[in-house]
Length: 212
Image (cartoon, rainbow, N blue to C red; front, side, top):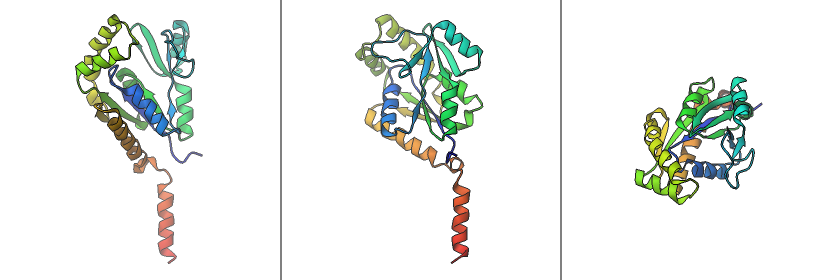
């Protein structure tokens, strides 16, 4: 039996604000974290592997998973569908492992409103400026000018949801933002209601006092 129920750690941000890089750093820091691999209908980018970056699905396969209630959350973004398969998340929680989500505000909202909402810790990552956000999108050279323009247009809508999150970090410096994320995770794990063995431990301390 697990010592505690796993936490669902949601990272969201406008595209280019650094959430994927921060997610990778957090996973490297704590290998016990489970990363929630999303399913998508978009084509793989160079170097992306099935089951590692994404589960790549046809539109028909994706729609079937939604119809069978196999998705924890799902949304359509830039003409493609994205979603979180439910089974791996529930298995990790039951084993007491925390799961990290790199998803947008729509997905985060669906998970917070689900039966698993009480286990969610949500963190929104902001860029230091809009100019820096666009610069990061262009520097990574993954998208066309048209796609970048679409992402920038969508950024204002995404940023407007910052107040729905438990924590908000401004990613001015990756090392600082990483340290802040670690602090949040350690504090959330130490919460009284996330330590099911605490009552038994306190009883053992009481018994020690009585037997002195």
